[in-house]
Length: 422
Ligand code: LLP
Image (cartoon, rainbow, N blue to C red; front, side, top):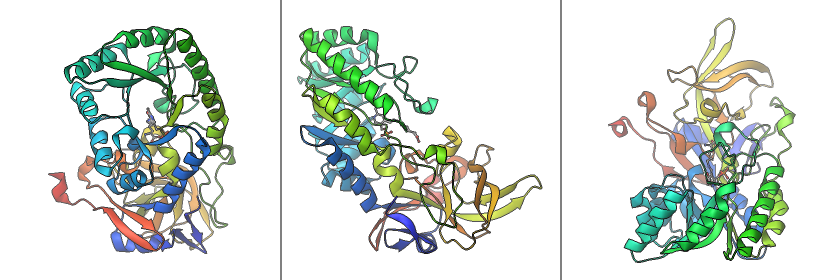
């Protein structure tokens, strides 16, 4: 993480002190570094090298309209999974010929919306969906460009809730049925089968599953071509993992478990698979979300109380699972660091929110810097799958979001008020 780092003992986002942002805009607060996510995007672009390619940002990771607009201005494509995301992508200025529409359960009206807007590809996940796409395209007197999502039955070795490429997962067309599905798709009216889509999971922390998937895709494209189905497009999905442990360094912070440090850089993963995939001469699209936004965002939260139960010490903060769901849902780890390091003393605590759920925690049995009521903490690597999963549960208005560019700060989403709960 380069744009979010300590300068002396103060945690900064670019040239702005996070402590000042908490003071001015209140907490809980999402803060994003514009230069960090644009740099992440360009690193992936560069890693794809020459040849027909596109980095289609997966909107599900963070769909703030200001962020989307910036990515669109930098020529990103978009990966959308609902009519709502397609609407946001179009509003942000992503050109339709750079948009792929994925999703396991697209509704008829969503398919119609995508076809009317002439998106580049519908990534289709089942035979019944293919039939519906064909019917809608026929009715609209248009042709649907389609990529079939294949489930290669390859283990992404990630959390089971975000593993998508195993035969037991609901996603894609099972590999043994893939050839039949392509043959059927090629026979349907108003459907043009252009490509193959794969996405085996998210937060994948080694290159191996990606390489296995690339090998699968290359072999399958050859088989398709041998049986007369001319494929010229590969959408390789997203899924590159990012570093949640030891995301940030300062001599005063406790070191986190180094076992999680060996995560390949997303660009290295691409370097490992791109030559293989390129051998097919297909256009190559990626759909990264997390690797673009995650380390560009933090969630700021203020310590409300410290409670010592005798058995445990609880740091009770003003953000909860309604503001960042990942720890509660996946037991996900986010490093938590004070925005101003005042002491090098560490202690074992649980960091918990105010929600009436035992699962409302950010960290359990975590060695952290000693903090006191009123201190502001940064929950790191929260730029992806953070704000998008906020809710009104327990009558909680959603937090504000601000974007930092150098020393400039822009509110890109107002904090909700009680009125927004109505
Ligand atoms: N393409 C497809 C078809 C996907 O399903 C996903 C993510 C992506 C691309 C983007 O994957 P990424 O590059 O961000 O890993 N809420 C979970 C993550 C869910 C991912 C869902 N699909 C979390 O907080 O970890």
